[in-house]
Length: 67
Image (cartoon, rainbow, N blue to C red; front, side):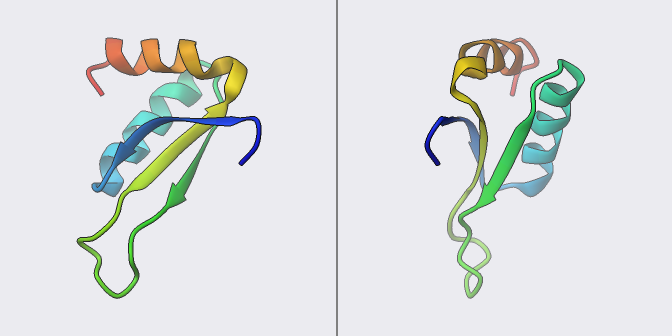
């Protein structure tokens, strides 16, 4: 995904949704990409991407929210 940067990963869908909501509340659009194996739900992670120019701010916001 050119122009996008990973700011958060987790194997727990609810944690990704929380991180996405926190970013949304701060005006940052985030997109999740599920890399979990459909045959083995416990394998893989979900990645959260933001526009490259928003990545530094997004990381700070997530860190401040202990995510």
